[in-house]
Length: 449
Image 1: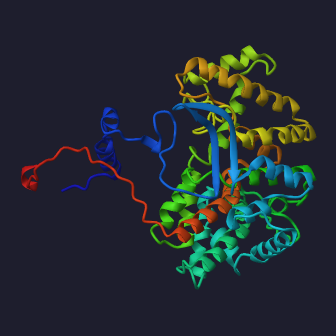
Image 2: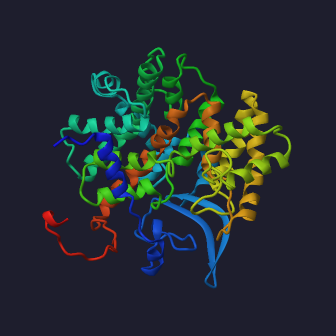
């Protein structure tokens, strides 16, 4: 008998797996897809003290949208940001401390914490050569996940899930994520884009944001405003309540009793998805397409027409989505966007990109109006943090391949806090229910099929 060709077999199998569930069954069995009620409220599956997202109040059973609030350990993110910016300090390290330990550090506690991170910010001997450079990945998130799992092999206490050991592992990951991500990009740039390979060691006296710019840029130079804005981006992305996909994954995998490195690798896999951490790249691509198709950036009518074509699946990627507009929780405003926007304008002025910033501002104003006219929505929409973050990274000269890894460099602090919280509270293994809706059938002998 002649062997079937691989391509032919794949085509046959492809047709077999194209089975879909009748959408009406989701309503029949009251399945809350995406763990969301029809009005957008999330299904309550756990409790946390780490982060809170607040976007509405309930009055006589009616949801009333309010300007969005983001809390870290009960503290308003606006107050946290105002605090370190007023003192002209970098805030990411302080934010990490707050998320993990639950309190703002004293000056001495912060100094000690920064020193500890500096000591951990060192990859094992030959790690860059043997793990990162020898298998340069085309996707830096995959490179980062592989590096995290490689740490398992080098950790004598990899399976120890006591709080003290998990804390050590998490602090190591927080310290080393910038190195693993940047070096992963340098390997990609060298082996896949044929650029010169330049590896800078981190500087112990620099903040996380400063070290990213120092290691990423060939000349290691950056301005104070550049470092300040990248640091702000790290602070705003560090945590977003326990209900975001990657933090939920962290709780789910931790609940099985798995090791820290497996948990963080799983969270990275979640964050990589374009519906989660990869959205800011889509915003940049959308604006590049917009700039090529607009006759003028000045006229609102031109912008309205383009956005209308997007919603009608006639422009950009024909998905019908205006990327960066709308959020699963926020309606009136995303507090991260409100904070970010002021400093984005400053950087645009420094870079001579005010015209491009004005285009973003126009789209931020016009897009929600267009969406409200075209779509039946249960709540309003506004620009989310992804709307401006990609533009910031672009102005900083950060390659698009690094956009989502920078998100991961920030969110590892939140993931660490959620992992420790899950262990401390010793919850049950998380296993949601799925109802099988396939029809019962009798087994048929192979000769009769």
